Length: 385
Image (cartoon, rainbow, N blue to C red; front, side, top):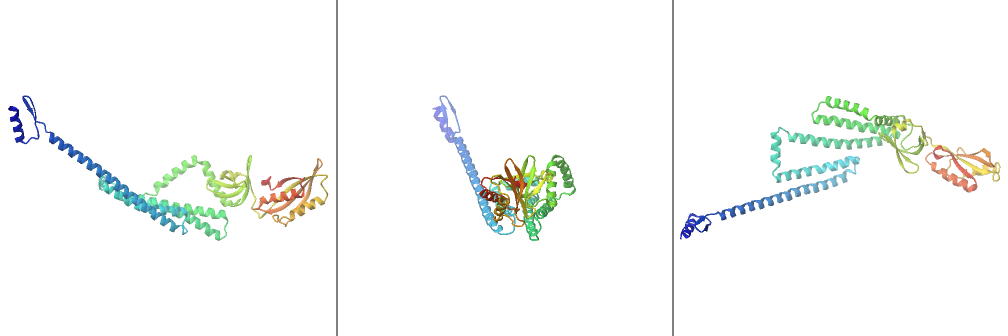
């Protein structure tokens, strides 16, 4: 009876449920705990859905911005390639076109996460002018990229214009390099003005850095100075074929370029070799193409039995004169050189164009056809020995 009375009292009081044991009655709020658990589950589910939606929306905004930027870059590069701009300038402008859409996409992504306003407020609280710093940073990057492209373009136009005035390639390269450095120097001062830095500070820093670099990189500076001197003194021009001896190796090749640190040669065998300018400056150089023609000498050795005075020499001379790759003025000459061990050696000298040294092989083949038992050896040019 007591148990029934307690149950009725609990129901009237509005308690959700009651649990009783023999002789006692203890109320437990089971329904309230269940409601709280359901509420927490709903809140967790809603938070997960919101996070997933934010991730999808922010990723989508960035991807759309990137796609739009790439499309604009393709259109921009396609148009700029038709102008006189250097490829670096074209590619740089193509990259810069991508930046505005990406910035807009990033701003939208931050706004989706409600972090943009809080980030700006935190920076303002720290007395950091985020707008000014961002603007200066963007201007600096754009100025550096555009200045490099402009310098390369101006250098190319300067070399092309100087070429129209028939200046040699060394002078064109030197003046183009001076223009390039001048444009970059002006750009550095513009960057200082953007950040409102006094000129004295970077000048002092450059002085200290220069001293350190001078001590640490003496060989590189030697190559740099030697490179400028080679362009000024013009012992050879870019495009000339030279012969350079760096003991014990002899390099024969065409000068491809005189760079800041090294001179590049394309050897007659097809390989490219890079030689530091300081070594080139101190080496003995034979310029094979300084003059329009150069002499070649082939030693022809025949046995005494096969040698006929005057007739053998005349046969060699006529064989060389019949070749179109050999210059006819001055005419080929054949002189007696030595007689030893039953063999006679004749020196056949002829002139060939400086840019056709390989045609000596044609002369060798013609002499071999004329005298199949003769021994042939190249004496000149020295680079072919």
